[in-house]
Structures are given as structure tokens and as C-alpha cells.
Image (cartoon, rainbow, N blue to C red; front, side, top):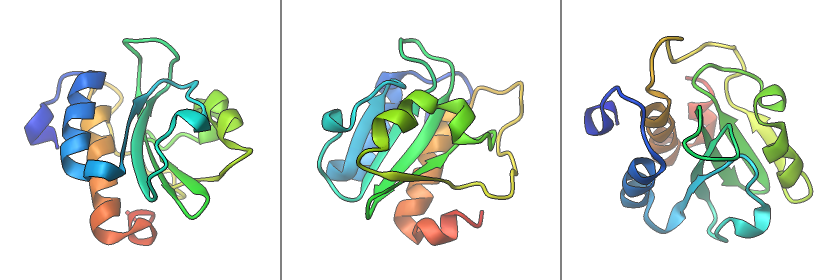
Length: 138
């Protein structure tokens, strides 16, 4: 994904364009932090990205995957979702349980880099190709 998007900050439009090509009707778009479950497409499984802020241009992208009533959350800095995106979790809790995917706390992004968008897409593509169980062991 970095070869497609580069190492500069990515926009909602860039991520949405590549996400819709990679995931087709399972792509749930790019959303702000305050997205509601009623706004999400009904597709199952569902791959999407949220921003850690409620308004553009945003600060940081987080990958999300929904399957069987659970939303799996992946952050390239391996931060706990309860602290990173509490508004999103509150909006999802009546319909989905949630689970952080980096159980070992291993980060995938250097603090001074801007590649969170491409990394989110790469993680979601790995989930699609290999399944969430293998992805949680990365």
C-alpha cells in the first residue's frame, strides 16, 4: 500500500479510492470518529477506516474490520482503543463488541512517520487474504 500511496499523509479521498478498489462491496468507507452504526453499510464482513478526530483533515487513521458481531480495531501505534477512540466505541457498543488486534503492544509505525493510512489498508488487506485470527498474530 505504501507503494500506491507513498509516505506522505493520506487523505480521506485517497484511502476511500483504494479501499473501494481492494474491498469492493465489503468496503465501508473512511469515517470520522463519531460515526454511528446506522451510517455503516450492511455488508458482512465490513472493512473500513476511521479517523481519530471528528472533523477533517484528521490526525490519525485506525483500521476496523467487522465480522460476526465484533469490530476488530487496529492502530499502527498499538494504542488501546478505549483511550484512542472512546467516542467510536460508545457509538458501536449497542450493536458490536470490540477487540483490539495488537495484543502484544508491538507498534508498526515510527513516531515521526505519516504512513498510518497505507498501513491501515495493508492490515485490512491482510485480514481479507489470511483471516483475522492470523492477522492478530502479526
